[in-house]
Picture 1 (cartoon, rainbow, N blue to C red):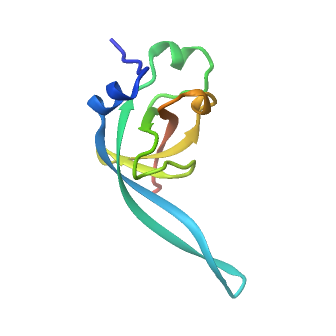
Picture 2: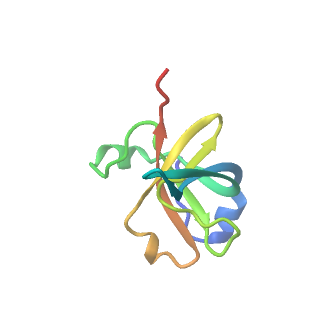
Length: 116
């Protein structure tokens, strides 16, 4: 059975601590912006897409996750942030309905595969 969250109290129940890495551009030195890497801690509820979401051309791929964050918490998620969960990295991408949700935001998280 797959879960679908509708209220922030349910998200709080299933939230787990995750490590977040955010890259921002800093001062420009010799024409190249310095990359500043921040490491943050957050709590998020992380779910797998349902089998229907994987099949109905919504853009989900095997290995993607749906990540829920409660609004007005210490950490404010941004597109491009990298979440580390179960020793795997996921990069946040937008899901169109997040601005319609009152007390939480929802993101698509694509699995990041490092080249070796």
